[in-house]
Image 1 (spheres, rainbow, N blue to C red):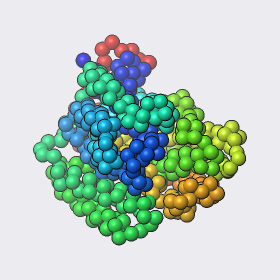
Image 2: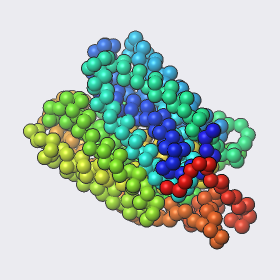
Image 3: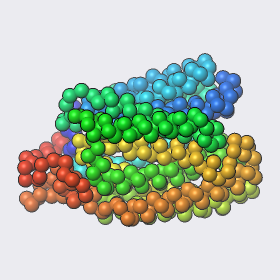
Image 4: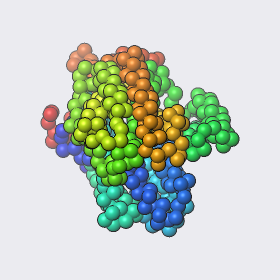
Length: 515
């Protein structure tokens, strides 16, 4: 039987199992987000797909993922995070099998849309399981380990995909999810404790769920269409209008709902709102770099697809070595310093990358910027995620994770859609080394400015005490209490005052020792 939720210690066998299962579960989604890029030429040749078909092979997945990820977090809080996580894994794995069998580009796009639904169920559940499973004082380190290991899946995607395409077939990139999904489905009931928001009763907020999906879906569609059309069009304007109107209707619906899908009270915490603002700005910068760097290395410097993917391998090793330590550092000194310095280092790395040009070597021109960028990324990912989750009541862990994931995905998608327009890159420029080099240089300056803005936001609005673990006068850990009462996070109280709450001492998990 798995240990009780909220009692698992970092570094114990139970903790290692919990991290491994959640990383593998979310890792199949992270892997697929990067590996498909490498396969697009082979897919286009095999299925006789045009450019629009290949774009929708990528964007169909992003559309449903962004539209439904908030709902996925809410379902986990209501019906059980482990249960919804497992449903997501099964759904994603089944959709991957359909992708591998697709006889046409239309069927592949439909299967990718179904993959996005599975990703929306499992991604917020993975992080919410980490947040609710570990003891409070271990959560930042656990999130750091989750971030680092999950980043490995995203980073090895281009390498693994390139090898599979050359050695087997493009369909093999989808088949690798089947054994991983089967293992997660077997292991989760044995090693992952179930948790949910026990205060949720009554029927599911169907109206809120539909409006949330319509809002995120319409805005995402508008960004995709703006990218394809090269600017505003009638379709883009209609989608934007639908997204804005449905967003207003969603807020009104959640205010009046007895059991809202998104409890608006979580935004009473200035820390939660500020951390999500930092997430949006910084992840927009990251999305621009990941999108343009790989293309620039291939077109301007003449790298192969596999070589351009391998160029970012140092980031993987840096994340693997430092993310958990960055989470522990934020727990010890507070997140403000890491979240201020991290984006500044990211910006410095981007400015170094802006010097990349035709004829440059990897060691002299690419590697230094990649290393500085990776150091900044390691300082950001775990602390920002831990801050978002710590600033919300633990019973809303799934929703908080869903909100943060939706913010990050939307920011990255916005960067991919808007950045080429901002720097003057059109579709044909992506095959022109001279035009692409000029656009890439300007894009790195724009993304560096975004990263700097994220660091300034963190310095101004992130509080160091948001990750504090407070104690009662008698020395008992008060991790079961709302954060507003533990550590002084700003915002109106979500529960009755501390003295009205019954003190609960959480039992230690059997067979574990303090690390």
